[in-house]
Image 1: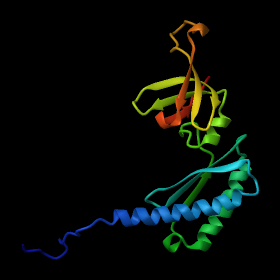
Image 2 (image 1 turned 120 degrees about the vertical axis):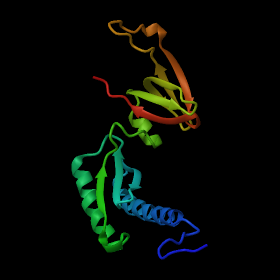
Image 3 (image 1 turned 90 degrees about the horizontal axis):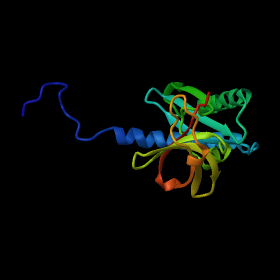
Image 4 (image 1 turned 180 degrees about the vertical axis):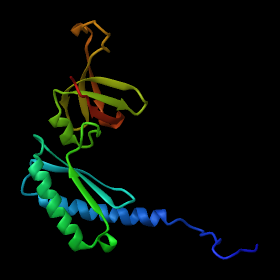
Length: 180
């Protein structure tokens, strides 16, 4: 086979290497944030994401919510530590520290606990969707009061409500519903 300049194919992908490096950076960021949160156990780290553009997104929550001032404080401290640690070449990164929005699925047991009494939508692994009020949470399951779907202009009959116990192993994701 005749190859011209610049047309050689590479027999492997760089993506696994990038992914592995990314996981190491995420682990480092998790350590830094968890150390910052340790003195205040009511706050907890939910997730760290890094986009290919080195946009670092850190989601932090609290058992009773998290004030914006705390998020700003964490952002400033983490930014300084990331610069000092030189985890990104040439300091080329951006940082966002926020609480998970309502559009973010619940990821941690503590998030389920803090949302007891709220309306949630649970998507099961088989694709079925259950919607209702989160009544209780144990280590391995949640209890949902499922209400029948609302029909326009018709008030739902509370007698038609039923309680469901759903194991966390059956759940694909859960989101908090916005009720107006």
